[in-house]
View 1 (cartoon, helix red, strand yellow):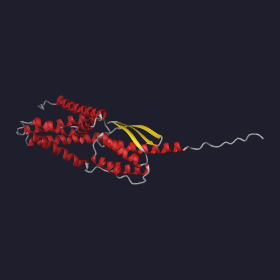
View 2: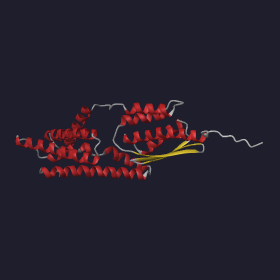
View 3: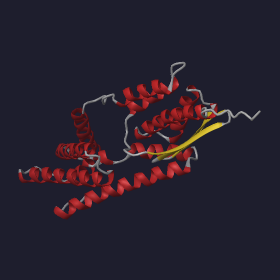
View 4: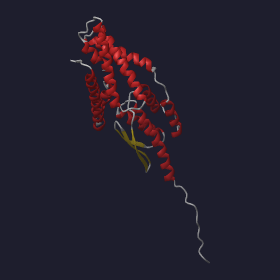
Length: 276
């Protein structure tokens, strides 16, 4: 009798199925990391939240390397692992979104699936700002004006700094809506704030009001552009010896400060003023 041959279609192995599950978990984990970095938090909090989400979705562990502009992560289950890299763009500060994502990572519903968590992340990403933009603009203006008073300026410096900062913040809101790079955004907003402040100081001078401390108004009008949150997160990363992340944040801060100074110098091309 001749030998009988048996043929069949190749069946997917459990390893392939497990890898697909890990890929789905990885998509969720990376999205959590990206949302938190875009909200302005430190690297170690991102790693902790990603680890909680990965374990909550059924992985054994997660190894993650987080920097200011990128995440490299590997998720493990038994002998299977899945690795992926993602680039982070659109950095900012959003404590409301950060708190929502971290709360989700700490209170992940039992037996959640990657799809269900993705739906929750969609809802978090669509949460509107806590305060309307016009209220933020007014708060920025008043804060910068108050800083002029703290430096020793008078109510004229307060008014000039407040209006200048308000104009600069309005410009920043518009340029951010265009997804413009933060460097030219900072340069333009700084120059506009200084020019508006200078114009008001000159107007008060023409009406006979003394502005002996106008430099306090000029400095205060660009206070809203000082990158305070990135500077704090850089220090926290360095304290924990996340050197790459911390140094990259320091570099980011220095670039923004140089951009701020460039805007002031640009305004000086058009008008004659002194900030010293």
